Image 1 (cartoon, rainbow, N blue to C red):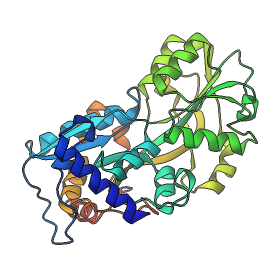
Image 2: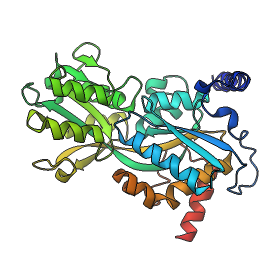
Image 3: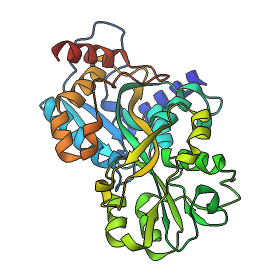
Image 4: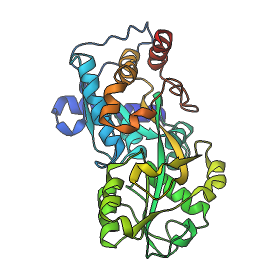
Length: 339
């Protein structure tokens, strides 16, 4: 399957180059596959990189755009980076492998499924690598106060937004429902909506509960809490952690600080790390540039998006079972020596 995937991607690149269609992404302008030679951390002029992010009101999208801007600035325009709104993790990986993007945001649990050929990628291991672990995502489960929902199990028969189709949020939402003894396809009225439509549904009462996996604060969640503060409440979902940890060690306990959304108190939840992914044949020199920029320009990223404060050299290599790209390893070695 891996050879077939690469063949299809190569054919797609030829078609894109021949037709010069905008919908093909930036693949025709990217470097050739990694040669395996010495890593210089230098790339040719007019290198184009397209970054797959997530919903427009989520942190992936905000950070992805800030990252793209900093890549272009850090290379004096040698690398021209752009970010695109997507459905997030699963879709990002599929389109990364297909050649539509050169970099993709993903949750660690979904990335692990991809390289192991499990979950949404059942039976088909994906040729992806990481350039860094980044900030953690917080699972944010919010219900309308009059919905009668006090736990995940209480969502039976309710209208529940499980996130965009093919997103990491949907993966976690379905696993949480299953861990509470519910079948997502039968026991809830699943609304597979992006965050903007989900927030609108929570506001007008057409949705009883939402799942969202994102950094803190997530703009869409801030909007919901600002306009409907007395009509919604966060759930503590940590009673499901033991069963979730059996599915993947990526799931850990975390806390949403009260100050994040001006809540009455902290909210315990389940967190999972994020990663930046590339194809395993990406030019190592470009991977090196992308990784160095992530850390060299971290102050600028933090100014744009608060969640970027969670990016750390101390945890950057913690991507197992997703292998690190060799260009990223080179960059992290250099950054570690300099630090």
